[in-house]
Image 1: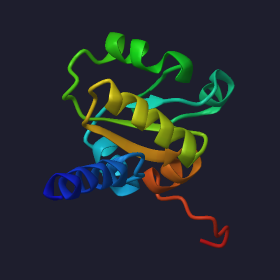
Image 2 (image 1 turned 30 degrees about the vertical axis):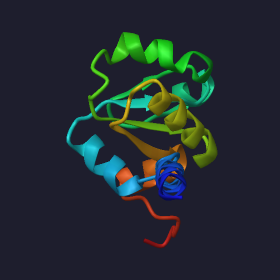
Image 3 (image 1 turned 180 degrees about the horizontal axis):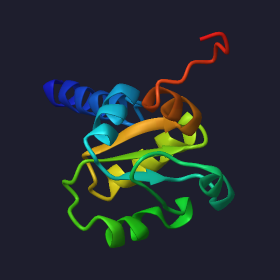
Length: 123
């Protein structure tokens, strides 16, 4: 019985950590100069990105990460066009051993938070 409780606790803690957007940590890391992985389309990337961003193809994410960041303990930020795409990318990277990845969520909200942009045109 205790073994089952331990298994359920472990599975629950892993599920709780999978795909969690932490925009505040992402903004802080980018301001410190950490690298960002932009997982959006090439067209979106060319239209604009954030500080220290490198575009990475979602379909080849893990292989490209090995070329860009060899140290799997390095802290870096990922973001995409939607929170759910960023969540899936974070899960892929964690499965490949990149546990220090910070999920910045979707580009628009991350960009607005990083550059302190509000939606109110009067401000």
